[in-house]
Image (tube, rainbow over all chains, first blue to last red; front, side):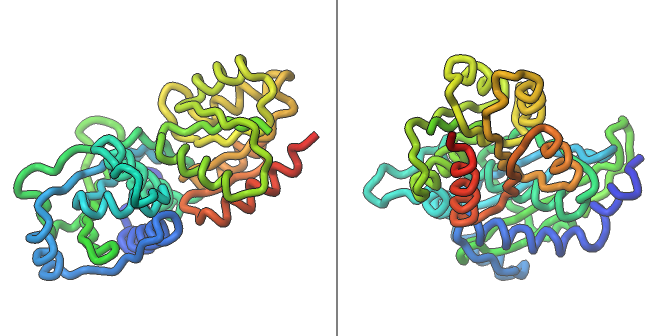
Length: 175
Length: 127
């Protein structure tokens, strides 16, 4: 079972903290601005962005396991890459490997900062990010565990899933 | 000054190198490693490294495991250690402090914050 402190990951503050964390990460390290986004706004933006990537970081915190995923369009990944690396416009644009690295690092920082904020008195471990192209029909906004935002006016979904225990057949809860 | 950057993200290593260029630190050479085990191999081959910048969560060997190895080896007594990590928990910071870490820089940070931290640490690292 999760410890009492770990249950904070499942509480009502978790989503609001995630919103703050995404804003802080985007602003400080990627020089980007983040705004909340309604389902309708998101759907309109998503229609204009056909190619998405999904970066996932799995974590363990006490007895809890979970994962944070960031789903973002390729165009946003390129913009964040340029901001993070200070790429000269005359330099070659980032290839898919570089964009995957970017998406993974963004998600890694978001996940770590979120866990630090929510459970400061416990350490955690993060698994190296896994990045993949989003499947056709993705994203599907509206799930409880999702945070819809725009980053530099481009859509992004941040999704959190937390399991109750590392033991098998544990009850699964979503933020 | 010779510096070793340890992070499993090549992009993060590149960013740190870029920030080093924004400081007045006289950098002779910047070495890189993608995990703690690689870092130990680099240090074995380059025993004049003065400043270590390391992440915590890495595959193969974590930053904490790396720091533990270094703290148990007198050869690295001179090595100034800075942690750069997403894990800003109080426990992790205490753990790092017990392993001779001079400074703990929590992600996300602005390049200016990193620049100022590295400048201060580098001044202290000079013989």
